[in-house]
Length: 171
Image (cartoon, rainbow, N blue to C red):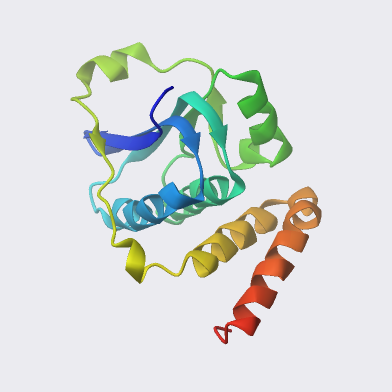
């Protein structure tokens, strides 16, 4: 069984984020914290997201990828590049409107990969300090904002999470 992980590397200001295995909510706290670090980097010049080795990616992770795209756009940089060759993953990306905010290709640019040093795991965050419900809610709101279809698809999830937050007294 393939281990699930998110790794990254940087070459000349271009961040490469590589996903492996099944990318689910528990991994998203690290991704969210890293996203802020990436977007705050004054040397940031681009982002490549490598999805060639994933088996599954959940909607929370998808929302965080859109968050990266939005942050890159605010910096007036070119749209991030997603590398994905799996039909099911590509169908998910298409259905959620990723072509609006990403370039999507099926092969990693070899000339770039050759210059990239070894990838390292995303830094871990203290899971005890994370409000997972708020994080999942934010990611789904971001996905909903991408297009009308996503509004319909993710509205029940957002309403359920908002209700949970109300019950917990966090809203």
